[in-house]
Amino acid sequence: MNRDKRQVFRHQLSVPLAAKMRVIEAGDKPDSKECNHKIYIHDIGLEGIGFSTDPELTKHTDLEFELKLNETLFRVTGEVLWLKANNPEDPNTRASFSYGVKFYLKTEKQYSLVFQEVNRFAIKRHKRKQEIRQMMKEKLRQKGETR
Image (cartoon, rainbow, N blue to C red; front, side, top):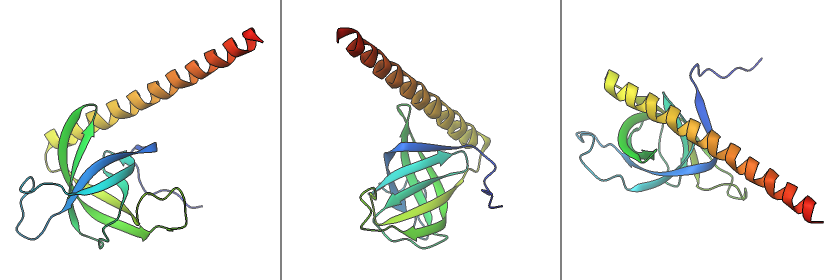
């Protein structure tokens, strides 16, 4: 039986969320430079993210992310744990490579902020999906009444 090793909630995004990322070079401090690579976040959770981008990175590379969730902009750092090349023939591919990153959450305040924002984000997305489904049902019902 193949089980996912993650023990925490991961919110899968049906539409990837655009964000920015930069590679942290030796001696860099977080927030010392602008995040300059566009990424597409496919899943996000308290411990990390899954994303795709064009730059080729290596395992254990330190990264800094600039994310906007719920109109809150924050920066978080993390480490590449896995990577894979994407199939360029796949029409759903948004970038050349996919990565999994584990966040470095050093303080209780950082942990709490990420937890709060990811949960709020997931709840808002879920509510929006329900609203869209309800609107579609209503439109179909109205179409059926006019025929």
